[in-house]
Image (cartoon, rainbow, N blue to C red; front, side, top):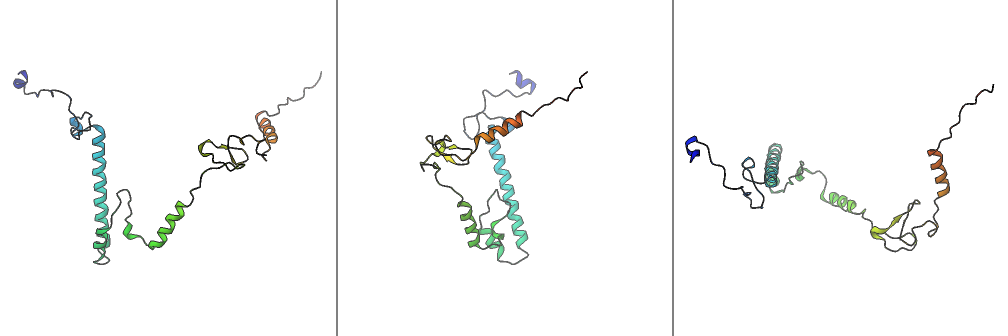
Length: 172
């Protein structure tokens, strides 16, 4: 009743739930939405503006060429993340299909042991010789490893421990 006299509004009775019914609490600063729903809504609005501007640019740019192109461009689905529309592509359709199949080709099959050809999956062991081995053949003596561990160890020790010689002193 004191609020009526002073003209102040009464604080809300309890916390405000998000208007999207996601279960989190909203705030008036985020239009009664939780922060996640508000961020998603703002992102969708930005993407819609971007799509509208790219369609507008497409219509304005192609109207000078001929009258049929805006009709074709209106039927093409323009991806929201792409800034370049697909209708302007200069490559034939068959060339773009062959490039896509070329990109998918580098998939390599299941990983196998270099000695016994057993599938190793994620449990394979990479050797210093560059091959992949199963648990049985992971040691260098089990797969006849061509890598020279002795020379590699000597080089590592030589690099880690440089020779330090003091200058010779004159004897008195």
